[in-house]
Every structure is written in C-alpha cells, then in structure tokens.
Length: 252
Image (tube, rainbow, N blue to C red; front, side):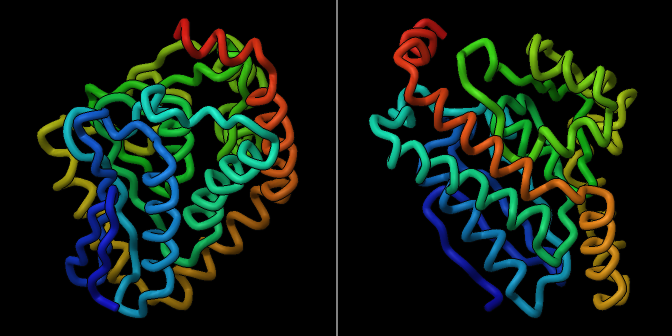
C-alpha cells in the first residue's frame, strides 16, 4: 500500500510521510467533484496504510485551493444531487479530522471557501507568508461545510468567527497567525521544507500515543463536530436549492 494513484491528487510517500498534493493547478486547484472524491479517498487510503504515519497536504502551482470551480458546474440541480455533493465534501473533513494520521498543511497561495476549510481541518497548518484565505459563502447565499462552524469558534472565538463567516473578510497569513488559524508562517520558498521537517518529527513519535492524542484532542476539544457537519449539510443543501444562489454564483 505504498503507492496510490488518483486523477486530481498526487500521492507520494517519503518514509512514513504521505504527501498529498491537490493537482488542478490550471484551475488554482478549485474544487470539482473529482477533486473532492479523490481527496477523500487519498486521505482514507493514507490513514489505512500501515507505512504512513503522517499526512502532508498541499496544493500544486499558485494556490492551495481556490474554492468551488465555477466552470465545472458544481452547482447541483436537485436536492438529491445537492445532498450527495455536500456529503462528499464532509467526507473529506471526516477523513482529515477524524482519521488517525496527523495532518500537516502546507498552505500556499489562496485558500478560499472549501479550500480554506481544508486548511483549517489540518492539525498543523503551516502557511506561506504570501498565502491568503477567506469565506465567500454567505455573500453567495451558500453555507460553509468542513465542520468550520465548530472548529473556527474553538480556535478564534465566536466573535471573530462571526466576522469571518458573515462578512467574508480576506486575511493574509500574518492575520491568520495572530488569530491562531495559522500554526506557523514561513517564507513561501521554504514552505515545503518546513512542512516536511514538522511531518518527519511527528512521524518519529510512537504511533500508538500519537494517534491516541489526535483522537482524544479532537473528540474532547470538538465534541459537537458531527452535529456541526449535519447542520452545515442541511444549510448548504438549502442554499444550493434556492434560485437566488444560481444568480449570485453567475455574478461572482
């Protein structure tokens, strides 16, 4: 189980570190259904691989993930399609947050919407000093996923979470470090090197205690994670089905 192949995610194991790279650089790694499904499978496969102790998640090219790909017709046409899509997105979060392997994020360029959610889902998010992030969902008559309604307030406080989610302000890496969302900020050219150093250090820890620590911290620290994802799913499905959303997405 040392090698895996996906259409839109590169997978490479270096020692006990599994590097997963979102690989749609021509679209700034924007989320189409293939990327969503590939990432979920890639993280699940990495968690099931006995040779993988740590996951390192990054994006190819000029961005980590620029959110939904508006040219890929992600917008669903029925409630069944909407629910299937949202549950696929939430599957990524389950794999990242509730999987056994700690996840180091190497966040480059833009992390927008769902891409910002994936960055927040990482256990050790390392941001390039040039990286940026924001949530446009509410302004588009949509809703966030990725359990950020539980994770974000726990990291930045409820007042700041309101600012980020309601107003959709754009933040640079220094802002995110100050509020506790970026665990570390490094020069862009040193991003992967720094992320690999952290990942290797984690990989050297005893796997039993390391996995238990991730599991217990996330269970005790985020007790409403599954409830948050369920509520997010219903709100996002409702947003997708509102005709006003289609108009706003076209304008955006």
